[in-house]
Length: 221
Image 1 (cartoon, rainbow, N blue to C red):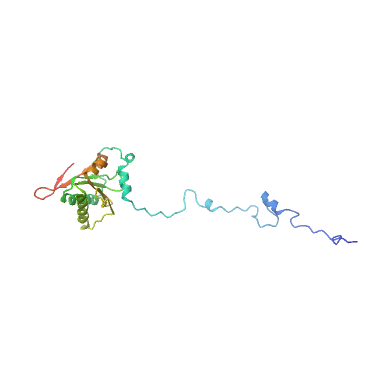
Image 2 (image 1 turned 60 degrees about the vertical axis):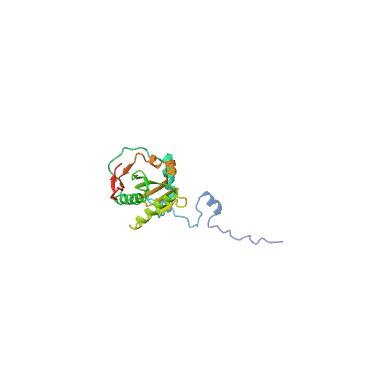
């Protein structure tokens, strides 16, 4: 007959007295003998909570993207973005250096027989430039010649365009000098897009007009 080996052996008391660690974990109760937080100890704050309120974590600012000329053209032609008419003021917001560049552009263009030339001050109305210089050429060759003359004249003063667009067809050439944007049109294209009418309420700047003696004279708008 088999004997019970456990008979007479003293029973051992469990250190956790029969507690089930899995059930205790589910109920959120600390298990006896576990290394949980002591009573009265404060829980560590999370990283998001540790940061003081009202102060965002410092992040590196992304580099400013280059501005394509297409965006400038679209902004000027978008009817919904046309600026509302405001009372004309005498105080100019444009820089003197930008004004000199615009006048230099006009002088070089008039030497090559540009027609209907206008310098329009848009400082404070748009954020990408201070002046627009509009002009017309008789043909694609004349438009290309005007662009070349402007580029050559300003390069002698160490002024180079950031971008030039439209030279292949020479129907509408745009030259971006940052604070001055030059638009050279053939007459039909200028009438079609009507930038003159878009900026009808903007200030016009005096344009140097060549005289018979070859001495430029100022023409006020």
